[in-house]
Image 1 (spheres, helix red, strand yellow):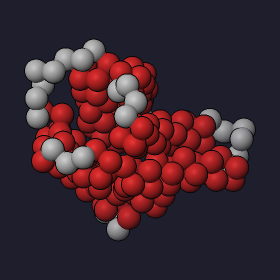
Image 2 (cartoon, rainbow, N blue to C red; image 1 turned 45 degrees about the vertical axis):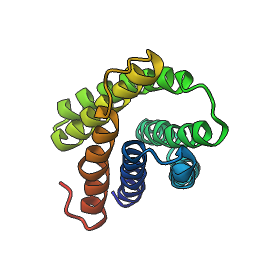
Image 3 (tube, rainbow, N blue to C red; image 1 turned 90 degrees about the vertical axis):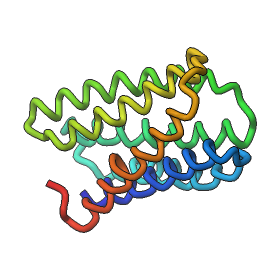
Image 4 (cartoon, one colour; image 1 turned 60 degrees about the horizontal axis):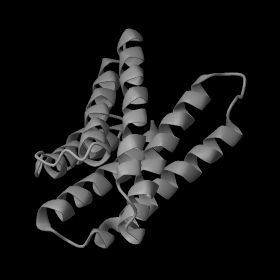
Length: 170
């Protein structure tokens, strides 16, 4: 769980900073760097993992798919912040990731990995929120998305990552 813990730690930091920036009305470019670093760690790390993996097994592909989905999320966010792209594309990307996250949650629970299933469920909610707000342009959500981002950054990613890095995750 070492690499996953490292990734989740950075994802947690990025989520917290993105949420605080949105609530505090910071220029979005201020969090682009941490999003670039986070996305790069995830994408490069999962490329290395795939090169080193037993290609006859399915698990390396599933792990890499999850890692790439997270990594591209943060590269996409950084690109949107830096280049002022239309956020609807990220919203629609988010619905695709939501579907993967829901399936992953169900599979984890079925395999007895309830804590991982709960994390996947939390992440699915966050990506679904991204789809609703950015893909469908539902604005009445107000500060819900940034607050959810901060809470998930603390509990569903950063906190889980620290627990994994110290061997406390079961």
